[in-house]
Amino acid sequence: MKFNNIYTNLISGAEKLALVGLGYVGMPIAVEFAKHIKVIGFDINSRRVKEYKNGMDATNEVGSAIKSTTVEFTDDPSRLREAKFIVVAVPTPVRDDNSPDLRPVESASRTIGQNLMQGAIVVFESTVYPGVTEDICVPIIEKESGLKCGVDWKVGYSPERINPGDRVHTLTNIHKVVSGMDEESAVEIKKVYDIIIKAGTFMVSSIKTAEAVKVVENSQRDINIAFMNEIAIICDRLGIDTDEVFAGMNTKWNALGFKPGLVGGHCIGVDPYYLTNVAEKLGYHSQIILNGRQVNDSMGAFVADAAIREMIEAGMAPKKATVVIFGITFKENCPDTRNSKVVDIIKRLREYEIDPVVTDSWADADIARKEYGVELVTYNKLPKADCVIVAVGHKEYRSMSMMQLKNLFKAELEERERILIDVKSLYRMDELKASGMRFWRL
Image (cartoon, rainbow, N blue to C red; front, top):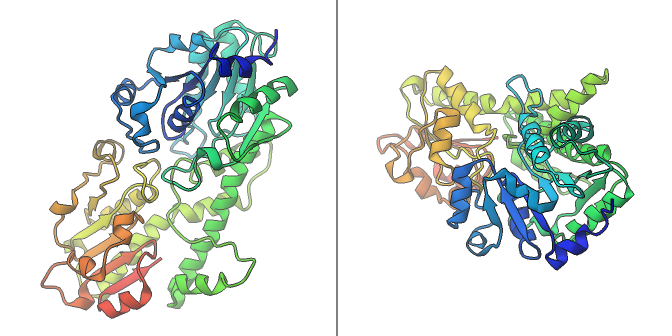
């Protein structure tokens, strides 16, 4: 059976491409491909599909383009039978013990297998450890479909590199790594992705290599940020400003430019566990990656402890203090709250019997309530605070003036009793000092 005519048939309109999973990764891919070829967008979340059909994009990744896209949105899995090129972009989280949770990708594989047509190519984009595509997903699809991989259909892997909320590094201008089970499939997969990837595609020799690329590149970032977080902890004990230290360090040409922070989200906060999990199975225990994860996973508690310390030094009784947290998403200018480490700040404060007030106009209030038990409060209903923690660098928080920040506090507080915790170092040091407020920066 020939697989080298799929690209041609997609371009001519004779065949369709299907996207399985329409979240922060799948939606932009579907919409971009639909500018050039026929696309079916499938998701098991009927509510999400309905919103897309009505021109609403809760991910905020494609904006108004959702209203004019030609993607055929559906929650009917049988529609996958219309496609000869299927892209899988479902989430791959970790369990409570940080082991890989492959249930979403396994479920997607079953759905695809039950609706797979002969002559199709299936490409996984979901982040997994090397071996998952061929050792776990392929057998499931073969069992459900009764079709033999390599004979009746083929498989490939192309790790997603979408950066939610980033309007500079977007889908089309980020290099795309592609791979296939053999040369024929790899070449065809590359040709299909070249339809939309302006930056170009980079072909690697095997599916396992492509799987490794994603978990390794995110593990590298995680380790670098962990180092900066350790430096932040040390600088805090030394009583010097971390940001000033990094500003000086970055004057050297070979400085890497990483900053400390809360490392959550669906990639950097998760992918290292996928890599170390497969390493453990092969008899190797990580010496660096897991230690980096331990440091980064501890930073929410570190920030909360700093806030408690500042309140005590200001003469407050923390249990009686009103603490307001700005931001709950895992990164700035993005509604994505998956694996948010701001939640670790909240949990730590609750251990001190402090129930902080949380606001975030970017986040979905229903998701915050369901996933984290946090009731979001709108900005205009915030109580006056004793301590303000700006945890996320949303543009509206970044643009706050010192006077706006001061107005967040109780009027009766002396300036030195107004405690501002600037997790992202959003505000200028000279302005913070001139404000008279008591402040702390990570």
